[in-house]
Image (cartoon, rainbow, N blue to C red; front, top):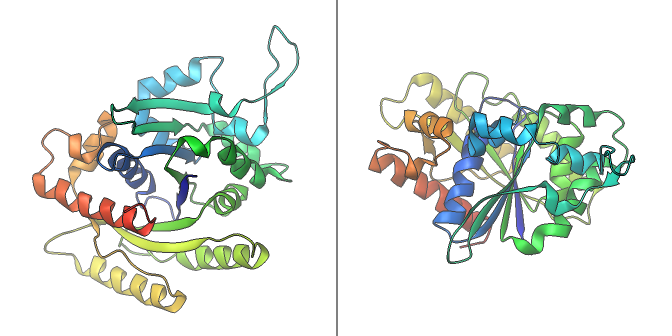
Length: 284
């Protein structure tokens, strides 16, 4: 049975997709786990990181392609042969990316802009993601969900599917703006769904300056730490420090530890973040 973790923050631009991309790679390649990453954001940044812009467009251009949108809509479009919509096979939604000789693997459920249309008529739709996961989780050790920065049925679907929630935070002006909404959202969900065990597993400071840290970042960190203390949330001991190599790797579709010219200390810093993540989801 797979461990399911969601990366979520109601504020955009905090590096959720970049972290998910690199954590997924690390967990499969270096952790030797079978990993599935689910892109639950209509912007589909995670899908483009994994596939590259051209590969992503090629995927969407194939008429047989299924994405996370099909999971929520349940039925594929009518085909020329049947003339009627058909139920989506869960395994048709999964894009294999890499497989290693030791059995570890990395797969993706891609997203697309049209996912935003699933926010209409939301009745019962949040339960479709956990049902989808229940059909495929035996094939994986770890499933990471990259969430959209919004309070919607997509958020509820992620909660319904997850054992752990992680919150990437970029320490900057208004860094805490999405956290009270997230705290209220998660609290309301747990009250209404007391049968489900879901845990706030930690805040991850992302894009931190490792030296000569600007006063605004230090102030932002203090504000986040105060809010985390109020809600009883823990903070990762290891922050994800700033490096231009993350953007380079995202554009090239390579994780930080396989990105040309990425400094050894940058790779080492991320390894510490990834190892702490695996410990917090109890895979280490």
